[in-house]
Amino acid sequence: MSSGSKCQAFTAVDSLIGLTIICTFSLFYIQTIHQMNTTIAANEQIMISERQRYEATIADE
Image (cartoon, rainbow, N blue to C red; front, side, top):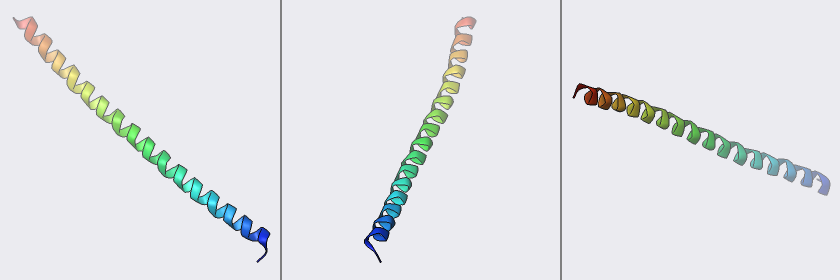
């Protein structure tokens, strides 16, 4: 095996490891953002319903 092919093999493996790390952290980031947006949307719905209930209580008094 020549020195050039060893260098090319190392470069290919190194590139695959780098791409794997980048993809893993990208997926983690996307999943985290999705979970945060889902939680925010659920909390907004709770806030809206509580506000409507509060405003109805104030209007009845």
